[in-house]
Amino acid sequence: MQTPLNQVINPTDGQRHQMLMNALSEENRTEDYEYIIKYLSPPPDITEYAGPGELRGIKIGIIGGGLAGMAAAYELRKLGADITILDASKERIGGRIYTYYFNEAGKCFGELGAMRIPASHETTWHYINLFGLNTIPFTPPQGNNFIYAHNTRLRRYQSVEEFLYPLYNLTPRERRTPWQNLLSYAISYSYLKLPPPVRSELIRILPEYSPEALKLMLISLRDNFEALGLSQGAISMISAVAPENGALLHISYDEIAHEAYSLDYRNLYRIDGGNINLPYAFYNSFSAVDVPGYAHIPESMLGSVCFKQDHCVTGIYRSGYRSKVVVKYSISGNGKENADIFDLIICTIPFSRLRLVEIKPYFSDIKMQAILELNYIDALKCLFLCNRRFWEKQTDYGRITGGLSFTDLPIQSIIYPDDHLVCPAVSACSPNEPGILTFYNLGQNSVRLGGLKKQEQLDVISGNTEEVHGLPRGFLNSIVESVKAVHWNSASNYLGALVCTLPGQKPLFSYAMRQPEYNNRVFFAGEHVSTKHGWIQGALYSGKYAANQAAMYWHKNYSRSSV
Image (tube, rainbow, N blue to C red; front, side):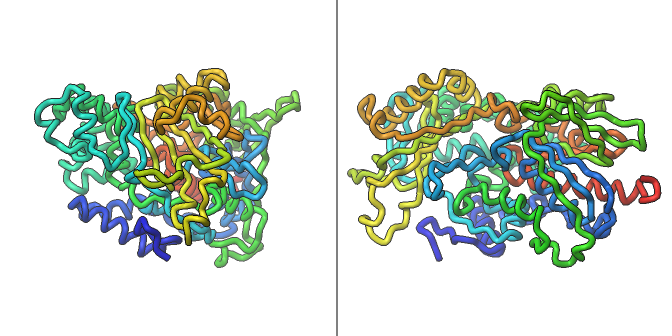
């Protein structure tokens, strides 16, 4: 089945790879194809580092039950280990995948966390294919979505150059350049000057980076814009029409460049029925024997996984007894300090949260410094359940049936449901049906909007939405039936949405963050310990990689007789 977006539903690996090649061909850089596939593919199978059943009787604690922890547990179970996942969340699983359902039927839902899966993210697709999950295209911005900037409302197909350029102090050359070309130049020119092997370092973690790549890791996005000769007017205009970049001008340029390099915003997908189905697939596999990917391992050699919710880790300690690791945790309403002893642990919680955990003795100096200063950015996501889809009402500009609108207002972006994108007839997809609007912003927009009291926050979101759509003030009062929001800086188990390194942090911290501690007894995973910050790819790759590390070090250094 083909969609109007020219993306297939449930693509095969071959179809995804062709999408990637086609997109790279459009940008005249097909030489990047092999590097992207190579460095985003999953690590080798764990049984290449230790044999099935080799870790029987070994107790492994995994701190954090998000996708990184789940992937690590899934892999380590192949070796027969006794695995305990300690997750702080009491009410749900999935970490920063957070699908919220407004009804029990599961038809009205939105994503409060990770929502997009690029066709190029090989490790994510490895697990999607493994569990047989269905995927459908995530609609990119459409021609009749809005751009609202500088108090000016446009549809995307209207001329930004005609209506917005006069409002910004641009140079004559900038005025002659189409805005999409200007944006592409601002984001991609610097990394595209690098030879293909060097620019592949954007999606690699290395002990040292080449001098050419290092230069891009030491400057901010704004520094890059200014080095290219962009005027402040152009920077302001780009920040308005592409507000996801405008919210992140202070972060390291390579954080934006690596996403452009691997086409993270082209050929996007989502999991049918909600992205939470991926964590559910892992979770359900932990109590199953007939598990995808385990066919070559005898049942007697499989390990066990115990998933403990409402277990908030408060301390990590090196034990004097056989180099074991003690993990202290609290349970809501327990009022006691609880602790378990493990042979190995894999720590997957964000460094923002790990900063509040007691660590004795300290990890290495560079690891502790990373825990102290690694930069997390804020994000706020809000879902409005609307009793009718006013955005799908037929106008001279057509109906909005998916995509995103962007604005320089605090809400930053509006994401529209795409379930009416393909209908057998207009009458089959009525605008009078309920639908969900998703609002998503980053950085200081999130800090400021998230810091408001709930009613004031909703008033701002509603007012911004009405402004973008040209609706009278108060229009949404009779439309919005229910609201659900997550401000990730205020979520106590996360204290931030995702890592966005500051200039210099990637070459300083990324390799060191991945190294084990306590004489190869404590390992680390999570999107922060990856080259794909904020993406499902980063969490899954790091979890699989950390499990392999643990298996390799145990096989090499700790024979069963020494345990």
